[in-house]
Length: 146
Image 1 (cartoon, helix red, strand yellow):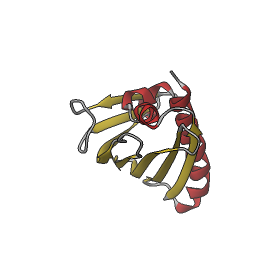
Image 2 (cartoon, rainbow, N blue to C red; image 1 turned 90 degrees about the vertical axis):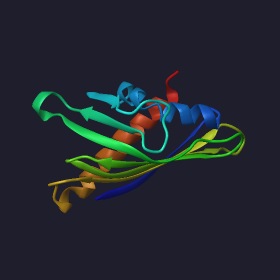
Image 3 (cartoon, one colour; image 1 turned 45 degrees about the horizontal axis):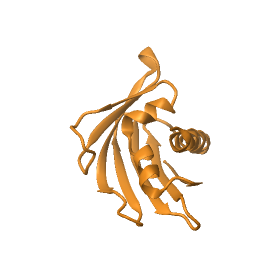
């Protein structure tokens, strides 16, 4: 199991950062070899289910997720979303929070608890490095893209 936290400050207002981070299909634009399919009708809410399929051919896997908590930001306030991973290979949870930043813009906090079944505990440290790098790049890409 790997538990980590990432933070970013962006000039975007809270509602715009929130939309960028919670547009699930858009994640495929910033995570290589990944396709995201939302399985429930819009809008996103508690109970929304989507699947990120990563990899190529026989080396691909599904990462099904469900929105367990959904609190979009209200005017001037923060937003918080909690995802639970229900995969055969990848389990855990993700929490995304978007807060107003001092001086304008927004501060994003991404917490992740990630487990890969059948991976021995000795692999936790390299998994943590890879996950921080991958999710950090995804955050940066989602927050940077128009």
